[in-house]
Amino acid sequence: MGHNDLVVPEIEMPAHVSSAVAAYPELSCFGEPIGVPSGGVWPITDIYCAGKESTFEFLENVLLEVMEVFPSPYIHVGGDEATRTNWEKCEDCQHRIKKEGLKGTAALQSYFIQRMERFLSDHGRTLIGWDEILEGGLPSGATVMSWRGIQGGWEASERGHDVIMTPGTVYLNQYQGDPDHEPLAFGGYVPLNQVYAFDPVVDSMSVNQKQHILGSQANLWSEYITDGKESEYMLFPRLVALSEALWSPREQKDWKRFSNIVPRLFERLDAMGVNYAKSAYAVTAQSELEQDRKIRVSLHNELYGSEIRYVLDDGALSTESPQYTNPIPLEETATVRAGVFKLGKMVGDTLVKEFRFHKAVGKTVEYSPIYNDRYQGNGQGTLTNVLRGSKNFHDGQWLAWLEKNPTVTIDLENLSEISSVTVGSMENQGSGIYFPTKVEVLLSKDGRDFKKVAEWRREHRPNGNVALANFLVSFTPQQARWIKVEVTNLSHPPTGGSCFVFLDELIVE
Image (cartoon, rainbow, N blue to C red; front, side, top):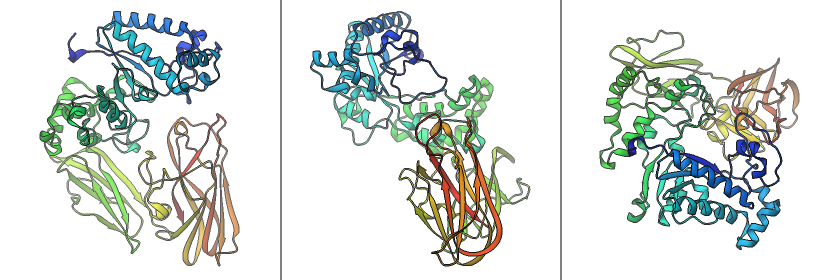
């Protein structure tokens, strides 16, 4: 078997082993039977017991069989995302810590991986583990797969270990285009050009460190993959871009050149019957609220030199439509439609994006409590800037609160007649994001005395999809200058844990 068709098996330990522990409860610390739910489990506490010799006997037998089947010089043992709470309470694990003179459960995990590394090394194989194997001490012959950014790979290479760089940039279970037009994915946004730009060798590395970088690995986790065709869609053409990026000398990498060969690449994938994504042809829109409370909409396509044409509202999009050259000024509600044209035909999806002006656009907003520092959108003006968030909650258009109930106060600057407030929100229960359960609207003329005028309620219900929604709170038209919107967060779902509530716009009309 040559390196071009090398299969590296991954046998997880000590965590991500619920199926093994369910089948053999004696391999866990307390020997209790467990279930194996569909989907992900977090935190991962049902892990192998590191104190029992029988655990290592079992795993060595498994690895012996794996080595018979796979001639790969590398054997991946995982080593990631182990929550060691059971080890803290386990008599066998604590006895092991004392007997081996270890300093806590982090060192016990290191003992676990080092022991497996010695076993594999004795059989002529090299252990690979995710970057958590750095914790507590790294086995002498191990290769590190750095997934939590590049820092783990940097540290491992400094210690003289070989490294495979596989940070979020090469996680192909993330969106590659507008989530509104893509199959449901884990989240995030990794377009074709970002994959092509990836370099596993970091400038700050020494010459010796750089020699330890073996390359990279694309990851496609399958929580949201329904079949082989969808797997192809997520892999191609991004996998081709990564291959080109890794095989090309840095000085020869050129996004303009690669952009020009994408059409021919697509022709080849067509001939091969591959279900690839055409997301690289999609148009994305960015907009900026100016001081005059007008917005300017910029249209983009990631392929170099694309011909983008657009229309406003109900106009027909065609080769006769205006070609985009400069940001489009808007000062009233409008819908922008845009697409990429090539040889007189539109390729890819049509962008359809509404920019809805309302009475609170550009007005001063105060928040209590302040939004979560991980999701700060465009700052304080996020909820009154016309710009809407997508299903990708990392797109920079969302404010979020964890467990807390946000109160948002808007100063319209002058008395205005208003009759409704619409709250834009998102739900992605798999990521801990839930729709609000209640919205209350209070009005004031003086900024001190507020009177409640309406409320909206919604019962929590399970939802396996990512959803965007506008929740309308309407009331009898009345005069007010200040609007206070009190949003109730579910805070804690029935399944346990904590809830985020996400907001992207408060539309006042």
